[in-house]
Length: 417
Image 1 (cartoon, rainbow, N blue to C red):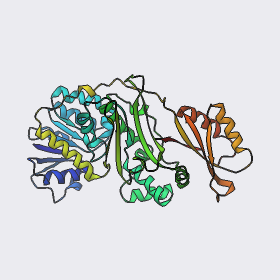
Image 2 (cartoon, rainbow, N blue to C red; image 1 turned 120 degrees about the horizontal axis):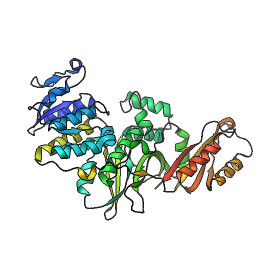
Image 3 (spheres, one colour; image 1 turned 180 degrees about the vertical axis):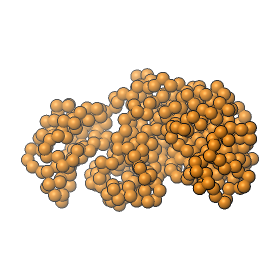
Image 4 (tube, helix red, strand yellow; image 1 turned 135 degrees about the vertical axis):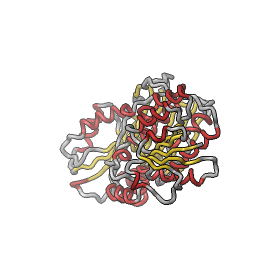
């Protein structure tokens, strides 16, 4: 099989090394990248053609195109052109699959070409194939887990070493775990795209990424880990999507947000840049997939695995069953206990004012916690709430936030099992 590589960054270079070192009958024919003169490296054989023109990959000497440039455009145009030219495609592009996956999967099925995107979710963990093939006999009703290695690295560092958010972000950027602009990671957009891909494959629902609530990890402080530990919990960025119990496959509960998870639970044991995907089926119960979720090498392993699978199978799989683009409705119906951290200028009557405001939204206080030793002019304390829907809690916070004793806006996290 002749393979062309579109993109030669960290992942692209790792993919090229794996292809060149593979014992399988694979030939790397082209490398396409912008400013290709600056990308040339000595370890790539002279037989490989370097180009800046995507059209050069559409000739008869290329069987399969690996796309690792990311983003929606021009990647989407390149995918459509490759499929129209009867080229099989392998990609690591989670955003493209999340936003335009239905159309692209239909085109691949219509043209009779292979389309692989194992690397779009959870790095080197073969979760797409495992869900689509290994769990095909079950009917999945929930998918959840930890899908962003950057956030998990930062949160586990804050948990273990009690360092500030800004310091741990700078460390993650210095080590290459976080981009210079870390918005997609910190604010949940990266994990949200992966969750939409998993929902399409596992639950057969099309989620519009913009419909899935995302909450950032930016407001978290080291004090949150102190209080979480006192409660018997720690904090992780958790993604979940679940079909509603009424059996309506077009209505789901979905979110990406930092949450308190029980210490010792499977979510709490995910460390560093690792990822975890948990599925719950009607018959098979819970199944977990765990491993390295970030970095060039794990992602390249997933890419090459798709390439090898395509090389071994002459008949491409049909994608029609997961190519439905009728959008699912996201409705938050589940009730969780909540952790509410406030930082206030201490004075009498604060708890009474909070209790009255919460009661107006039919929210009950479960406990109040206050660690000693903090200055009165900037005093952090925590209120835990009995189970409630997040929209009710958010409305209560909007009412509470303008009260004059706050030093900063309250931080709210669900407490999940």
